[in-house]
Length: 289
Length: 313
Figure (cartoon, rainbow over the protein chains, first blue to last red):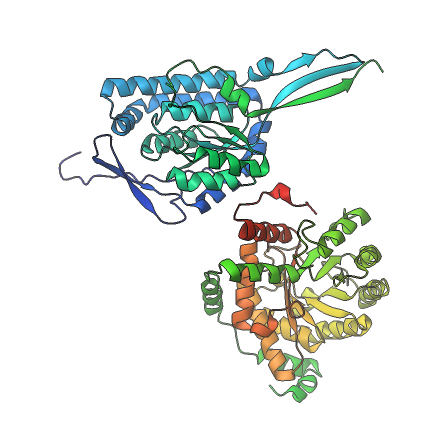
């Protein structure tokens, strides 16, 4: 900061439908670093923000899923490029949030960028792995293809604020789903940075919506919402999972349970998370008639 | 304004002009500010539930497309009688509004229910036809069984200052309607000023309108809160002056429950509680009904509903 210059503090907002609104409720909460020091004031989302986010996601999902797999891969790769360009800033917020040394934070950011690239590459390969041409006893060409589930609610991991977030978000959107993400409650800053990256990555507004706030307040609203088709409980609050799963059964959501303890996100992920949020469509096509 | 004097005042082109231009001018800034202030009213919990049910009972479920088929009208009539098949406590809507040729289909399907059959007529939506053609259009709709007729005024004549011609048409259509209710569409989006809206409202009411209606839905802007405010004031003043109750119908652009509730607040504050019933206030809409049902279900179950929970038509 130059001589006599006032600090330009950043306002951390929500990301809904491609825009950065404050919470509808006007609330915010204090975020502290791993050492208890004050980091920033962050928007405290309400149930109405969840409602708006689901509306935005629902509106964006058909366009995103009908984009070619190649294009979706390009867009996610572009997001990775943008993250790469802001590595310094990501490293700073990750270090602050998770209490890591600068070097460790930089390597976590690197892993997160690589994870984004890894999932981007899957976009036009998923159908080859999860789809099939099925042998059937009849004059039919029978094949199965994976299709996106729809609008997916994602409770981001609580501990791993960036690598964990990318590891649960990328597999949801790469196949054509739209996501409503509730960021880590105590470590939300990297998620807001990621939202800013996504906003400048040609990702259509509404495909990813990022909410910051109390997970225990927002998760039940997402679980009960009848316009949400699946729920990833990766960062569900301790003791609330069973209730969330029961509520989610109201409209037969797919629910991906939380792994305990939180997995080491640095490990090779495999395609499971992508495969969980797709539906298999099988087509019987008459031949030789 | 003395009631007895109205018909004499409207007797000639010159006296009608004096009457209309003698109406108090509308303060544009004031009307818009008042409408905006009333739109911030917060209606919650039980009041919201009441407002949603009231709004549902005021909906004129409308389909006015070139592509309308008997099948689509039948679907719409089913939805009008029982908006939510899963919940019999949802009240039926006020009316189904269609083109004249589909009136018999709607009429037959709505037999035995409280839902009225409304038909647009008089060369809807432009109104560009001779009076005899317009009257034939109306007679056709009434003969087919329409309980309510939505006519359009001749905006060209009105804007050219030929108020007598507009009044004459409304009176002629009124006569052709017989027992059917007459709603007069002002198409406020084409009237340019609030003063014109007030004058057109008075012309329609003097001519015998049972309802004055904002728009056809084919012109943008359609219904807006300030326009509805001016029309509600006109209807209230006319009712006070003559003792004949005239209703207001907003149409076009009302898509969400929140919009609908804002109109109800306006009705209550401007015209009074007497207007909060389907005989005096209507909302012409198609997609609005589903949003009202979604909000109703949210209000009752606590969980946000999805669009796929409700039928498209």
